[in-house]
Length: 141
Ligand code: SF4
Image 1: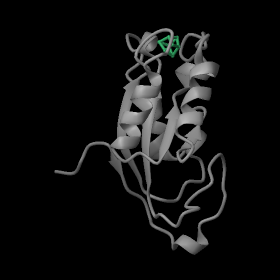
Image 2: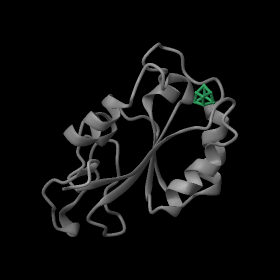
Image 3: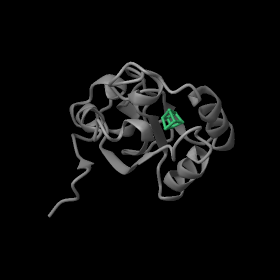
């Protein structure tokens, strides 16, 4: 039985993959993207992340234009307010093989209730500084 979160599409030759949409694709020649998603803990009671998975599967939102296969390494919350655990969680995703981290739209856009995280700018800044080798998406859908 296939892994439930592994999404496969056609694979283009690395040299033909270009910068498209919100992402720079395969700048290191990889043919797949290994993504970890960090979401807001406060919204888990009202959202199971369905729109994130749909955006990945349908190549919409931040994933528009991605031609390569996407493997979801993990989908994890920030650890709760005020986001001090988020760096540990980002490191865990990277340690499990994620080369891209997406901050779900519940964080920066405030989906689904229109209430963006009041702390996210700081903890995202810290993550990006501590893990400079990772590609980042500031939203999902
Ligand atoms: S720190 Fe921000 S993203 Fe994390 S639970 Fe609190 S409001 Fe949500």
